Amino acid sequence: MYYKQYGNTDMKVSAIGLGTLRYDEEDIKAGRFEKCAEIPLYAFEKGINYWDTAPFYCDDKSEIVTGIALSQVKRSDVYVTSKTNFNTLGSNPTRDDFRRRLEMSLDRLKTDYIDFYHMWCMMNLESWEKHMEALYKFFEEAKSEGLIRNIAFSSHMQGNDIETVVETGKFKGMLIGYNALNYRFRQSGIEAAHKNGMGVVVMNPLGGGTIPQNPEAFRYLTEGTDLTVPQAALRFVASHKEITVTLAGCTTKEHIDDAVKAVEGLEERPAKEIVKAYEDRGVSLNNLCTGCGYCVKGCPKKIEIPKFMDAYNQYIFTGEQERVLGRLDSHWDMEKKIAQNKAKECIACGKCEKACTQHLPIIERLKEIAAL
Ligand code: SF4
Ligand code: SF4
Image (tube, rainbow, N blue to C red; front, top):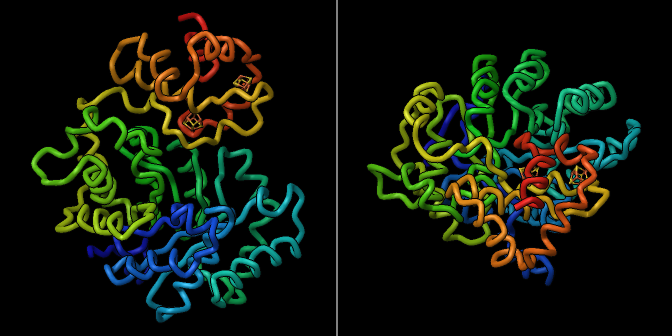
């Protein structure tokens, strides 16, 4: 395993981290938590010492499974994370709400401290400011008591906004989505964090499945290697000098082996060089939906936006408009006329665009689809 230094600390973390939101669904449903815990334990055997978890993952069982594994290794050999925000605490949280949630995470993780506790999923500066005002003091208090070791944040903001947060100096590290789809949006953010001595952990390195599902569009990442497209996409992220840990969501031991192979003999390079090397390759990647699903909640018309945006991706990949309705029909089982009528229901309220992690013009795209 290849290790990197976490920001300006003396912590050495594995270049691949374990994302714990993909424990086997059937096992989770059946309550076979010990079996699921074999995944972090196997990851540990392979040198992965950074485990990222949160409430709600895997039907809210991820922390429990991760805790079972954590209790079977020497605690100081693993860095474990968890997260909190208004979604977990309610919109007007008190100190007691914060403490109750933190204690629940500690209890589930069977530990008396969390290495990185995240102010979770900051979608924009406005939301971040509200969280800072309501919660940061509770984070600091928990840190002073040793319940959490480091305060981090996770975000779907773009580069400039991330820079604003980073420059407050309030966080030891950050967790952001970064991949071969969206890197141009986020590059300045990771550079700023690195420059400020922060650890940078990356989630969603495969673009929510978009990369493995469109291997031809991303084949260029594999050139000169014997890696598969998903492995090359992991390596693409991990090779950034500014990025400390690349999270791989693993369901099976093979997934772990694949991820470990992706960073064998890793060579680190500055983001600027990497971006330059790739800038004229592939398709117009920042325009793509990654299928993260953040836009769905709150659509007053219950439009399944990720399905429509995934179908629109096909147009971006191929330049063929007819692919959009074809994809909705064949892949998402939405008969063309029904899909178009649904797209027409959009009342342009803008809620989805505010929530979109890729900042896509969803309303415009739905209009286009309706008019095809
Ligand atoms: S803009 Fe349209 S698709 Fe987006 S949330 Fe509003 S109604 Fe739904
Ligand atoms: S439209 Fe945006 S928020 Fe919705 S799934 Fe796609 S990338 Fe995510």
